[in-house]
Image (cartoon, rainbow, N blue to C red):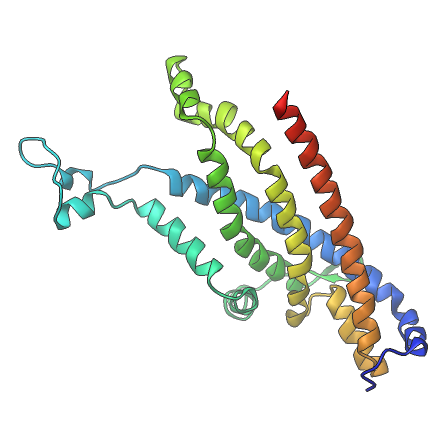
Amino acid sequence: MDGFVQLENFAKVAPYAQLFLQGVIVTVLMSILTVLIGFCLALVLALMRLSDIRPLRFLGRNRDGSLKEDGAAAVLSKFNPLDFIATAYVEILRSTPAIVQIFIIYYGVFSMIELPHFTFFGFIKFERFFPGVVALGFNSAAYLCEIIRSGIQSIDGGQTEAARSLGLSQVQNLRYIILPQALKNILPAIANEFVVIIKESSITYTIGVQDIMSAVNAVKGATFVIIEPLLVATAIYFCLCFPTSKLIAYFERRMSRGDRR
């Protein structure tokens, strides 16, 4: 296996162009589904973190109705189980490697679940593709949760008070007033997460997903050439991520210009 770049080695890679094309399709499809799953789960987690459900609230008051300032009862009265669960989820997934999470979900969780064995688009194996999407979606949700939470908190609290004065419920306020404005503020960050997922999806080849890096591995095994297919993969990732990043920056500038009017 030669460690130097040689032009003739690219000729050995050329017959496997179809594999790289299939890898691009898998990578883009996986990234889109990952962001969708991650966003839906992140929205739930963000609302859990912003909730004010304290079932032991009564422990924080004395018999005369005054608030307790310290002690175990005062601490327990502030305990929010939903916030605790969501915070634990976010911190654990943000503090552990994505590849470890993928292995746990694929070899641990889905080893106990019998997935149907079939292919779609003629080359994507569902039993490997689906666990990869789920693992990346769970990982992405931990980061999108903080983005969504900050977006919701950026909305002026006076708008919530105005909604209440108009008779809107909390759900209506969230649906019609808070979330539309928050989504506009966080849309560039969500789009950037899509770019990040395009790059991070490369680790799913370790569980047999036929992405771009899987094509590199196949070429290496067939031709004993490694540097040249890696360069091809690098060029493909660049062509996917760089234009997407510039497009996101363009729309972000357009949205910011509209806010300044």
